Amino acid sequence: MRLVLQLVARLLVIVALCLGAATIWATIDAYRSVDRATSASAERVSQALEALYWRELLLRSNRMREQLLPSPDWRTIETMGLISPGICVQFEPAGAFERPLCGQSKGIGRAPPRWFGAIVQTVLGNHATVTQPISTRAATAGTVLANPDPDAAVALAWQHILDNIHVALLMALAIALLASLAIAHTLAPARSIVAALQRMADGQYRTPLPRIRSMELAMIGQAVSDLGERLAQAQEERAVLTRRLLEIRNDERRALARELHDEFGQNLTAVLAFATTIEASSTQNKQDKTNASEIAQDARMISQATRHIMTCLRGTLSRLRHPPAEELGLEASLVDLVDSWRSQATTQPLIQLDLHGDLADISGKVAATAYRVAQECLTNALRHSDAREIVLRIERRAGPENTLLIRVEDDGGGDAAKVARSAGFGLTGVSERVAALGGSLSIARASRGLSVAATIPLAA
Image: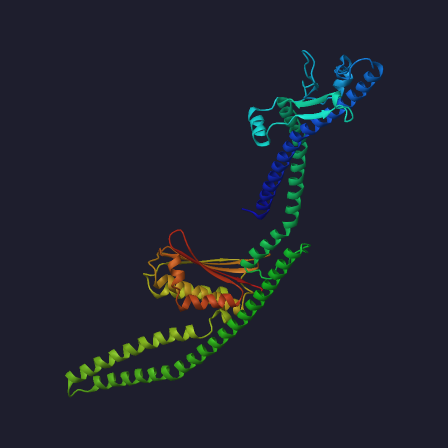
């Protein structure tokens, strides 16, 4: 899961938890506000009755104080205006058939769900009755009792939640949206860092990164840039060492070729001369024809074995010396290579040479490496597979790529993964040559066999 989505999901969880906590707090506050409204209603009504009490006391002094209240004047619209919605006020001592005076409770809110009322009453409990004396100086003035209506209290709490939940939801959505945009903007440089790592995985080690404002991401980007620089330096050093190793190997091959030609080749020539002389002498000996015939036959066998060894030696010398690509050019050397394989035997598979692009100006190490790749791949296809057709494709890709592609494909079957794991000295050597020039070698499955492809940058 992407980091931005993870952070946004966690932010939404936090917002949901905060919203739930705010809802619980709003429920408790709304429920407790009924207690405050009850106390305030009792206090307001007691103050109004206290004023009424002293007025009746002054106007009707001939009456007993116990009979001053309740007065019919206290049950007025003004008194009801002092009572909060859902609160009922009662005078004590109550008169005959005296009923509580209640504030308007209709339309104070939507009817709450039953589960809400049950939870609120179970968790928060019932409201207490508020008792407020009319006058602290006259205990006989009476007392005001205020009781909240339980259903009205729950309805008020539910309406309070509904009134605030919309605002809370809008704020939560706004916070989540703005925070998500801020997180996405902050983590946007991470895409550039990942893209740089992917380019490094493809071999482009020097990958410049844009300027990053976040300190942590800037440190990561700097570490990635430093790593890419070190990898590029290591790759360059490796290429230099590989080229030097190949030069030393070529020098050793040329020295070995000279030694074989000068020493081994001359001795084989001498052996062939001696065998020819022995054979000629034996045919001229007329005294012992039986022994002479056997000696001549042995001499001919020695001559045949020597010629075979000399043929193998010439092939070895041709492989040890510089490939003809450095002398004849890449195209002519490839044509000569294919013709030499075709002329060796009539049972050889069909070899097709497919050339694309201008190969005339390709020379030097690139031409020599391309020739070695084609030579090694053709040799492996002819010796280690039952191919009936082999295609050697050389393509020069101009434009931004500016590379040379060498591909050898056969129809002899085989397991590409197994061949790649068990690559011998030949494929390992050409792979090192290609890598020294900044190229790559791959072994893949073809339609009916194997395909070995090498890509060499011409800038090398």
